[in-house]
Amino acid sequence: MNWQQFLTEKVLGECYHEGSSLLNAGYHCRKCDKAFSVNRTFDNRNDLMDLYQKVYEDGKWDEFFWFSASHCKPKREGLGCSETTAWLFCLDGSSYEEKCKMVAGFYGWNEQRDPVIDKNSGAYGDN
Ligand SMILES: [Zn+2]
Image (cartoon, rainbow, N blue to C red; front, side, top):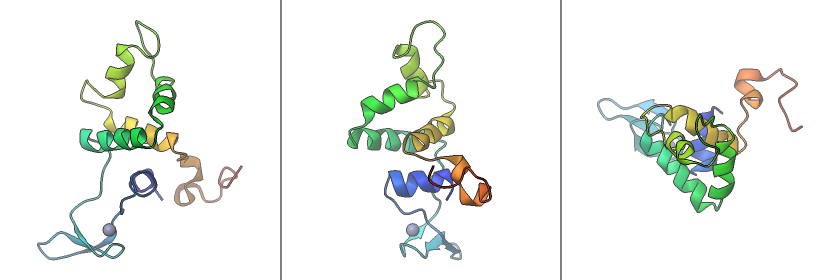
């Protein structure tokens, strides 16, 4: 499972579609039996805001905010300042993917445990 699939299925509770191409009609998903065009890519504002909204609905926004702030390196003021929120919401229009990946990390995603990437590593498993 890659981190995009993790966010789609484990965090947002949606189907990460897999399927075959239909001629001129997008794709048909063999898991949910629906037509689809693309999966979420988590490199844009829409996907990021859906994730933040989900964190909020899960009652974890406060916890997440301080988790995320620890990833921010404010230059002028301290953590939790306006600089942190501008960074968190990608107000410069970039790094959406980095923030989405951070949400994945918050929910327990660990790249080292990806069995596809690292199936023979000692890091894989519950430790
Ligand atoms: Zn599907």
